[in-house]
Amino acid sequence: MIHRLNRKSYTILLLLIVFLSACRLGKEYQRPQLELPKQFNAISFSDTSSIADIEWKKFFTNTELQGLIEKGISYNHDLLIAIKRIDIARLQVNQSKALALPQVDLLLIGQISRPSNNSLNGISLKNFIGKSYVENYSAGVNLSWEADIWGKIRAQKEIALTEYLRTTEAAKAVQTQLVADIAQGFFNLLMLDKQLDIARKNLLLSDSFVVATRLLKDAGIGNALGVQQAESQKQATALLIPQLEQSIALQENALQVLTGQLPGSITRGTSLNEFSIAADLSTGLPLAMVSRRPDVRSAELTLISANAEIGIAQANMYPALSITAGGGLESFKSSNWFNIPSSLFGLAAGSIAQPIFRRRELRTRFEIAKIEREQSVIQFRQSTLQAVGEVSDALVQVQKLESQEQIAEAQVDTLKRAVFNAQLLFKSDMANYLEVITAQSNSLEVELGLADIRRQQLNAMVELYRSLGGGWK
Image (cartoon, rainbow, N blue to C red):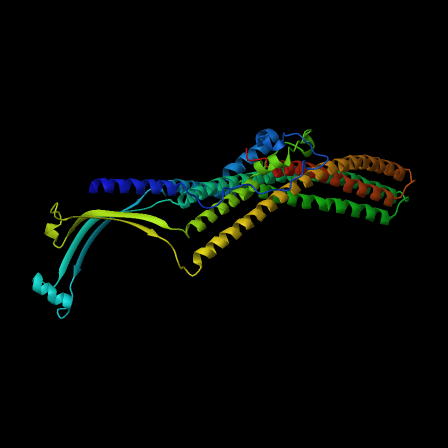
């Protein structure tokens, strides 16, 4: 009868534990409402396709640029650090899978106690065992287990998994930025190459004009001031060459460091004019961008973790059911330590602990967890707003820079003709040297500006690709 009652009690206790373990405090995560436009702006495509879905190797088809990006992904230190964070988070996920299992410890204890001869314990030892000290040796296994009544352990597992996903998204965000930085650095390098070529050609043009002014001065038609002004224009153009060469070397070093290499030159056999803006720059829908862009996803995963922390903080205020057990060998004499079964011992206990007064510690943690969740909501919305703003800015740049390029190209053609005509008129004594110098100076400035506009166009295309979440595939 007693055994039946015990069996019934154990069954009821087990069912109670299973029932309570199904309980979970805290609310299930729901994505907060986001204020998103139906499409990015009037100049963007409104279909669901997006350039961010294109792999970076297919988006950047130039083999030299692909090589630099591959080096960056393999050796960039920021990306390598982010990948190591993923490895740490993966280990934490594996460890969290064992949180529901009991904790088992092996203990080996050897103890000698010698009380004072004048103490009660000392007098008792002498009277009962005839010694002034007592020995105790034990070897045992202790087990402790806490029932996951309120879903606290499950929430910890969820947080570990969410942290792993967050670090993965963070690494993707590092890669998207890295790919964009390398591409923009490469285009900047090609722009500097183009500007250096323009400066050298204009230097030859300025040199021929200096020769012409000297010939006219020797013939008595010109004067020394004209020669000096022509030489000054030539020197101003010549000054650009070492400045541009310096900028090229610095940009090469920056690209090398970005790809995890020692500073040095970069071999390239392509020019800025060989690149063009892609014809189809589809952005897709803003809502899809939220699920695609790694930094936005990382912010949302942080919010998911904060939501789970509320459940843990709340569960800490409720009763905790713990079960402990132990068993092993124990003896007052080392010679009897392995005298089995006499030296065997065992213990088992179950406890339910309900926090009553902790000086508001648990309540404060719960309130802080709720505030931190609200903070994470704000940060998630902020990251979403910033992402939409970056896409919109890139779209405006792509459109407006195209108009600027058309105007600058027409201006370059106009000024080239102006330089040619000014030189002819100068040789015919129908224009003075200042008109020729002004035409050459304006032509040089506009040509350099056109190269910069083309670089900005390519960078805007890269920025649009990155801001939509492209580059990690």
